[in-house]
Length: 285
Image 1: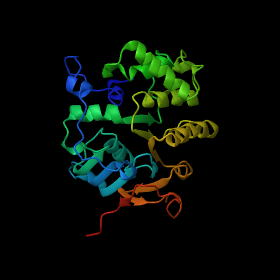
Image 2: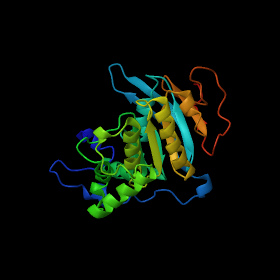
Image 3: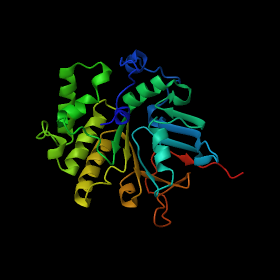
């Protein structure tokens, strides 16, 4: 795993090698008043857009309003070059938008220092990628436990959590296996267990079955279905409308614009289960 990979799951370490106490141990205070959990949005994008500086400037994501309810399963569907990666980076707090406000679980991330965004990312978001990003010289248990190193959790407890999460995804018999001895599906299950280790509020999936055969992909998606059934909010980034159909709701991204429904390959109507979230496109000027 590279240093950049580690930042996806680990809090900030200073240039001198010490842990940033503010990022690791401080909890972000909720800036919003309490609301009814049944109507609460876990994700809310208010006019969020992303323009990369030029020359010429590139508007990778046009300003949108997007809400994803707590406990909802939403697919964001789009072809290559549609803006999926830009949106993923914004939702995962890896980048900050150039316009608008992103609320995550009641926290206004647009006003946060980078150390606090890192802490919030570690607390609230579990990532699953197309590439597994496992350390080849570490066992499955060690790969999962490493995601908890900078959270002040004792080593024995980290290993206990790692074993519990691996058992949850059906790998209780492969706790001490190295990634090189695991199948593609098993490696992705280790990655899922790692994403779940910190008990996130949001599971952010970026083409998690892209490197798997159809049978293995179905098994991995079934695991994600089960996690959602248990109450976890899932946001699936995909180009495959068959994968998107497993979600309660689909949103299409194309040329940096979002619209409700799964429109990849045809002009499908929105899914039959809209869920508690809504998406509103900005009006044409």
